[in-house]
Amino acid sequence: MSSPILRSDMDGQSKDLLSCRIKLVGVLCGVMLCVTATVLVLSAARNMPTSSVAHAAPRDALTATVFLPLVLRALPTYTVRFELVGYKTNNDNLYEHMHVCETAQAQTSIGGWSVVSAWTSDRFTFPPTATTYLCSARPATTLNTHITGFEDNVTYFTWGKPLEKDEWPDTIGVSFVGYLYDQDNYLVDTCQYTPTLGDNGNASCH
Image 1 (cartoon, one colour):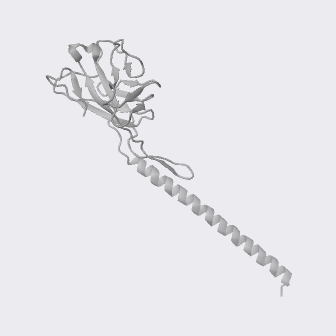
Image 2 (spheres, one colour; image 1 turned 90 degrees about the vertical axis):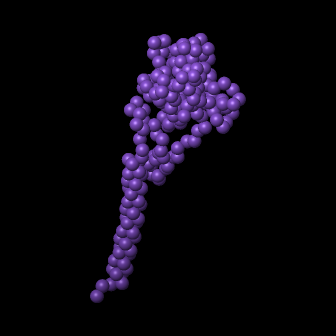
Image 3 (cartoon, one colour; image 1 turned 45 degrees about the horizontal axis):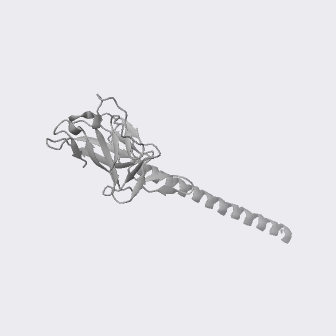
């Protein structure tokens, strides 16, 4: 027959062992939940639509960044839009340009944003000083393909291309596309235009 002291020691050890097992199960459950959440997010990201433009990888869907704990970041909302393309103003390629403006707010900084021509795959990135203003209040921010002498690096910019190089083609009846990305390479807007007879070399973006 065991002594009361020995039985008390054994009961204490059993309780300690049971407590350790309960804590271990809790830790394992927490790890399993984190792993499951990570797998679900990665699976969703794998099924997100991707751009068909080979030269860029816009993040135009919900982006999830996995930490412990899990953090989700939603797509930013912008009201900056392409306005028009001057693909051959006054029959002179010197003034080929693209207009961008703000449709809802007084002004927006677009430093670090970029314009991409699908025709050439060329990309122009705006400097930190770049700003665009409300379309109805001030002239649109202008990106000239060639050097015109009007550039101020605030609302007028130049791609600096040679005169024989076009970013916005002028083939009548054929549609062309331009893309606008923010500083994180999110797709902000797309400009599809079609040169037509009688538009004086200025085509609206759709």
